Image (cartoon, rainbow, N blue to C red; front, side, top):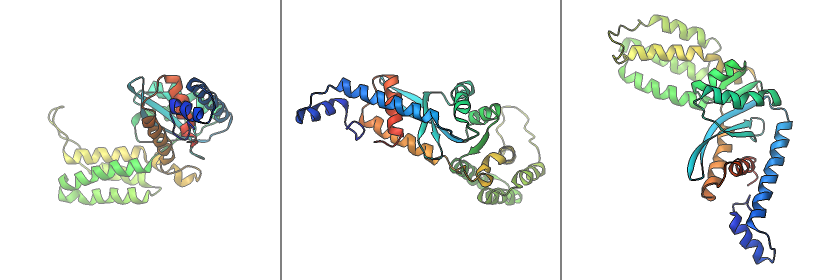
Length: 264
């Protein structure tokens, strides 16, 4: 009944209506027990492709950052922890044991620099979510179309074409375009970047990460987005709202594990 959405207090009331005496504390203990069993089962299996993302839930009247690691084969979480995704060391401490225990070789994430740093340190293949890629590049290109001089508009359109098609030689072509654009002539460090400076930065950023955008193209077991992880976190957020916040951190992690499994 808890997994169907009832609170522990409501669970106690409903059971009492049917003549069953069971305290809400007993219900809480059963949820913790079941979550622990599922977590042990998940850690025993092999996970080659892992999705990582962060959600924010309320516990002890405070909003907490919770990192969720998901098996990209079935969308089920294998680990949940309190991790600041902006801290590379914290992310590495969370991810490294999973790599060793589960046999992870590919990680799927959004485009945050932290993930790129950690996957390089752990020598993992890294697929950057195409949804995030197309969203931020599309926004940047729309701005550049309004500001870049006319003679460079063709470069903007060529970038758009490469994002749409993701050609294998995209990195080489991006570097060629980058070399064509004159370097910045800013007089002071605090002087704002010109539209051409912004275009050069976009080109080199895409070139440096081009392989990360295309892992799914040569490894069919790797999804091209991180949507499965997002869906799992979405279930967790929804259940967090119905329980009006968690009372303890261990209780919250166990509850989120059950919810993330799709069992409610």
